[in-house]
Length: 213
Image (cartoon, rainbow, N blue to C red):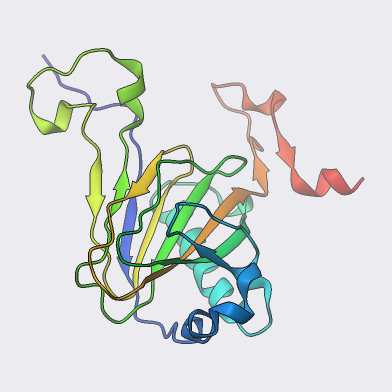
């Protein structure tokens, strides 16, 4: 007899030591940078590419390297996969606000960086179990096997989170009187299926460079 845990959903958290204080400039002057910030009092977001500005490009490079390392060291992906960041935006959630359940279409992985110094009473990140949509039952079983139960991640200073973009996610209600800020971003792989293997991905390859031809 053997128990196998298959179909994993890799979720990565990391406490960063880098300085991300530049991001505070844009949250403090939010009225002047509406195209870079998502106001989430009502759960609505406006997406942009804030890390492509010259003032924040260094932060983009740091996050790109961290995700590349996650792909090679944890997922076992070849370096040729070369993930690329697509969209990036700041979120600002005031007291009593929250972000409703959603997922990030047209992306492979999503990421969040919590760069505020204090997250006491801040709303938590809720990651929904993708298998809950595959069942009509909610039996009383060990939480490890309860597909109706997701996970919650408590924000903290310089906490970085990577999770598959197919996961529906939301936040709890912001209880603190302080505004909760975070940086969100997405990744896609530049190349897929570039090796011949038992799954036949050789006939389903793509290289982003082919789109320029």
